[in-house]
Length: 567
Image (tube, rainbow, N blue to C red):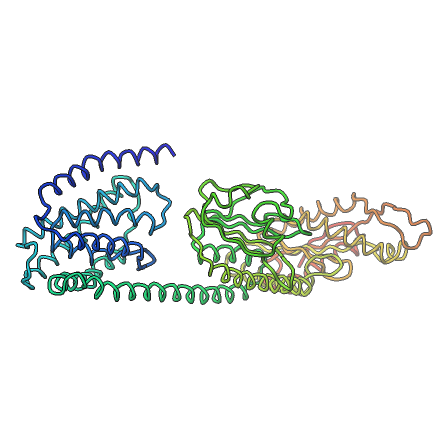
């Protein structure tokens, strides 16, 4: 804040040294002897109106005020042109929204336009231009030089200004091209206005002004409708992109990213509805996901809580409009807010709040588009979760929640291909079987046996090495697929696992006892180990070798032991 104040003061001092003295000198020495006051008033009015109705090129507001100021200069000289331009600056402060301090904007624009007018006028006189001349080709040439020097100097001064302040120059090659292209539009219009004023008189303001403002209004309306159509089209494209995603977390992240891009937002907060209480699910600030602790938000609390209660979208154009309603964290530079309920099947699934550090950043039509995008998101999210559940059922064992045989087989082929390509050097398989598991079922019941299988699966998951895979092979058999594990490392792992299982007390409630008391059961396991490339270079052969080691090397040798495959 102190830095911004200092910058404003510097601008004020420079303005005080340049503009007031310059204006006083020009008004005292350059004002024409005869001036039509009605013309002067109309020049000012038309200049202000032109500034109040800018058109947008490349997303940036462009004012065509020189169609008024250039004729004023050609008729009465630099002093009158500066009066019209300086008064138009005041209108610019209201026409163009900005987060920059209003006084800083005024001083900067006033200095810039004063310098531009003086430099352009000097160029005009250097090439032989004369005020009030009616010689077409001389007027055309000198006016063209005036406009060309004006544009070139403007671009140069802006570049120098941003370099001095260490800021990135916002003018792109495309912006500069638009600036020079505007000369083709402005110059004929300004010259037509000038000659018409000299030939027809004051009625020229109506003859040319009326069609000009009608045309500008049509262009603005067309541009707005085009922007709406483009936004709707882009929302549809985003919906299509979301619909093909199968990871619900990724769907949410992409929805937030795409929404902030579409609406040029700097902040996004996604709240999930948990039994009519809101909890922050994702926070996205300035192109990064961040962690924010909001706690639970009750209905009616804050902006999001009020939207939850009303089920109606809201839009705020500036900070002071919503600040009193904000009961949780709000970024210091947050100004505009767009907040919608995410509704599907008459149920509010959550709340999305978009924010911008610019005032009046969001328009009313964007509420409908964001509502549409929110509907796409909810449908895509449900679809992704359905696909995940279906995939889980096809790849996972329903009892143990571990991967099933089908997935293990696919994974084994994948890892074997990696080894054959040289991505990994070793691939080991560890196959484990519970000893005398039938006796456990016969003694305590099948449900108790299932409980033991489930508990054992959790132990196997906890012991899973990085990048490894564990699954239920079938019955009471389990398999580890361990990339980059040598045979000896796999044997050592298997022995540690076997001892851990042997020492673990599995708590069950016997189905076959009358008292249904909880009891501890101890089990042992036999393990077989095989390795590629030591034992084989084929995926299914590796699995068979581990199975052979399990039954011949461990089971038949007395159980409760680890055996490695021997050719």
